[in-house]
Amino acid sequence: MQMKKLYGGIEAGGTKFVCVIASGPSHIVDEIRFKTTTPDETLGRAIKFFQPFISSGQINTIGVGCFGPLDVTPESPTYGFIAATPKPGWSNTNVLGILRGALGIKIAFDTDVNVAGLGEYKWGVSQGYDPSLYLTIGTGIGGGYIKEGRPLVGLLSPEMGHLRIPHNRELDPFVGNCPFHDDCFEGLASGPSIEKRLGVPGATVPENDPFWNLEADYIASALMNYILTLSPKKIVLGGGVMQRGFLFSRVRWRVRELLNGYVANKSLLENIDDYIVPPGLGNQSGSLGAIALAMQLEERVKDSRV
Ligand SMILES: [Zn+2]
Image: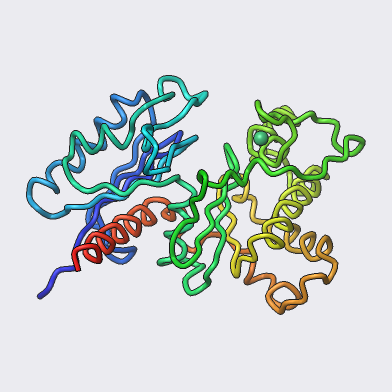
């Protein structure tokens, strides 16, 4: 019997790390999850997890989706580094260099949201939809845009969470909590901004609280901008805030209201329930996306040998 080729994947999040050995969602051989602490301890645990699979020859490529801000420009001298971050101890950590040095195998590297978007495109709910957009709305807000099967990286990795959106200060006097822009999308609609504004975590705010209409309006405003500029064929909304499932119908309704018929496409006019959707891979978009990223790297290496 021919065994499917295995890959390593790391979802390197700001709060937790997930390391997997898999060939896809239906074949996950091993997996561990642990809290993100110091770089030494956290990367050390990941390295220890992968070493036996590498020395036995079971894997020779790993994909990593890492929290940011991150340098993902291969030509840059700080490629693979985490830039200045409020997360203690992680500023200027050479994540890619540490992993490469310890593991000695090929490593593909990208942002956590790009990689989660790739996972949803390869095996999840945006399969067959190109281009597609994955957005996480949680501790932070970020987006991964997948075009021609690859995450879009240009001058830098897009920072979709910091979009400027309308803020009616009479309706919402909260100044916002982005340290760079105050009331950008992330500053107004992320999990911490909700908690700061209301004094309690969003998870405990009842569904009938009028705040949620405001939240849906902010999300819909941002989505309108992505729809008009990026024209994704599918929009996946993940992250802690979107665990409040009732938000989906409100966001869909508000997107249609804001667009006001201007984008006359069936997906928006008739099938919006299938257009703005939760992740198909649940909490595994990131770790499986890292597997998909490793596969893409191996394909590129093969191609370049021809
Ligand atoms: Zn911002």
